[in-house]
Image (tube, rainbow, N blue to C red; front, side, top):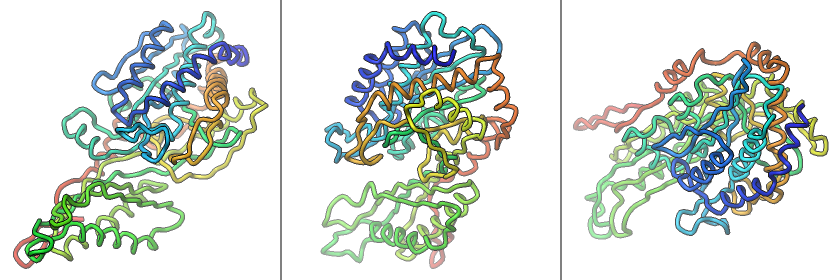
Length: 444
C-alpha cells in the first residue's frame, strides 16, 4: 500500500517542477507571500480541495477525511523566501530569493496533494490528513512583523506559531515537514536551537557633527559600544547551551554631517533550551543598557518570543527512517545532533510529536548567494514520495503506528494555551533607562 501511494506522484512530475520554478521566480518574504499563496491556492482548488484561507495573512489549509476514525496528521510546506541581494536570482526590488529551499517544499506539497486527490488514494488509511501552506518561517524583517503585531494582524512572528495560535491546527495529533538540503542523501538530526527575537533602538540627540557635536548624543557610538559589550560577554556563554547572538544594524544614521540620534539593531538570542536563552538574554540586555548609560543615551529593547527549541520525537524519527527505506536508491543518515538554526516547527514540537528531516537536491550555501535547487527530482519529487510513505505508515492498519507515537510522546506543555502563556512572559518592551538628575534607573 505504501508503494502504491508513493507511485502516484510520478505522473505529476511536470506540475511539481512547474510549481518549484514559479515559486523560485516569484520570491516573497514572510507575511508578504501574496502571489505565492494565490498560486498554491489555485493549484489546490483545481485539484478539488476546499481550502480555508488565513485571510488577513497569506497561507491556507485543507483537511482530507478518510471516513475512518483515527489520528490527524499535519503535512506542511513553507511559502516564504529569504533576502540575499547578492544572489543572481534575487528580486531586483526586494532582494528576496528562495535560498532556503522553501520553493521545493511547496512543490513537494503539490505532489502530495495531487497524489491524495486521486480516487482510491485514501483506501486503507484512517483518520484525517491536514495539508497546510504556511507563511513566515524565516524570522526576518523584525520591524515589519513588529508593526503587524502592533496593529493586531498577528500575535507571533512565525507562521506556524501564528497558525497554532489561531486554531488552524486544532485537532492535529502529529506533524511533519521535509526541508531541502545539499548532497545526495536524506538526513535527519535530533533538532535545532530556539531563539528570542530582539529589536533594539538606541536613542541619542542630533547635532551638527562638525560644528557642535558636543550638543548631541551619538546613538551610533552607543550602539557600537553595545555590540562590543555583547562580544566581550561571549566567553561567558557555556558551550553546551549553543548560544548564538548575531545582531545587524538596520538603521545607522541619516546624514554624515549630523550626529545620529536613532540607531536600530535587530538580533536573535539562540540557545538549546529556554533556560539558556533567557540567561543569555539577560547578559545581552545588560551589555546593551550599559553602553547606553555610559554615553548618556537611552535604549529601547523589544524582546519578543521567537521560536521554541525544536526536538524531533524519537518515534517520528524512527518513522522517517523506516519511510526512507521505500526509496533505497537515496542514502539515509541520522544523528542526535542539535543544529544551530531555528524553526517554528519548534513551537509545534512543544505540544505534539513532530519530525523535520531533510531531502537532498540543492547546491551551494544555505541562505547564501550560490544556493539553488539543482535536482528537483530529489528536492521535490522524492521528497513528496518520502512524505507519503511517512503518512501511509502512520495511518495504515487503523493508525497503530501513529497511536503508538502519540502514546509515547511527552509534550513539554499540556496544551497550546499553556505554551503560549509561557512564551508571552518573554515579551518586554520600552526604554530601559530612566534618568533622574544625576542618577539613573536601569531595567534589564
